[in-house]
Length: 399
Ligand code: PLP
Image 1: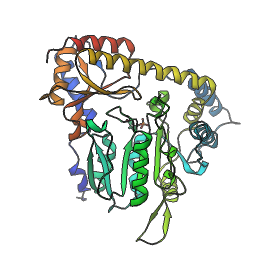
Image 2: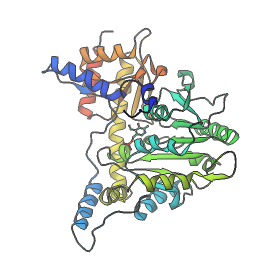
Image 3: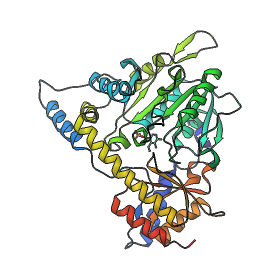
Image 4: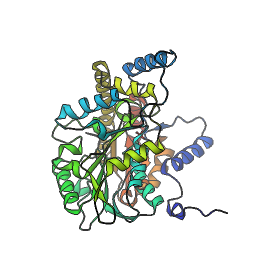
């Protein structure tokens, strides 16, 4: 028998969402006539923007025509998409990003999960708690030393710069699961820390489109000097409803360097390019055309409406929970609402109670780490009708 990667034995037994799906499945089997509303998994429910659908149709037709058919494309993405990303997501905010710094992929989950491969196993990783589980699990799989940074309510759940040296730091803003957003000052502190400690920040801004307060940063590259210390990951999933279509991108700046045996500085961009071109054959042409349509004037308008729709849900949830007497966080510049449970109630117990009493599914905070115990996540990605209904049911909860 071949020996397994024993690091896998150190993972929590199941990824969070399959556990929840199983619990809901069991409840449904016992209560087949009950209507269950899910405000649990962070998946979108609105259809794709029409601009993306038209682009998809057009691209499909091109693929059926001998004169415009495309086979393998460039692994790092077509120029038409990369140029539009740069123009709209960066240049428009005064940030200079070069085409060779962008790597288009089939999802931010893969990017934040795979990026650790270009770092040494000996790198110490700092991860906030609670956290999007992928950062943690992929580093456990790799067998790295992981230090958790407990995110506290008094700090608006933002991770404080630690008093130890971390080589890799994962930051997520707007944050999943807490729905809170790091300020420019918070990010400056982190960039400063990374520059002093020669660390690399993996900045996940998959929810950047939900930041409506213009004083809050959407990109880490808004902070001076950050290109020397940060990789940024973004996704079309929550911006434009691409969770089923799959398209994202990662920025690996040319300035970002690491060392081998404490010798010469080596470019992480070169390493990631090597990794990407070796293990990935590019996002499909039709999907990249759909992603490009997000930046058309029609696409931009539709996306604005899409985000407004979800953020209206976030408002309904926030106000509904507050009216029911709960303390809530997030939900203003993020599609996640982080609810504080009354003292003594464990988050998985609240999950069961909410399912049994209100037939509403949410996500237990402890599923995102020990720091999430005593909290519960609801998402704004449901339909407005269901969100309103869920809030009505929650108002009637007996704790
Ligand atoms: N990053 C964060 C913080 C997320 O919450 C998610 C999805 O829930 C992802 C990345 C994954 O995005 P994608 O659909 O592009 O893989």
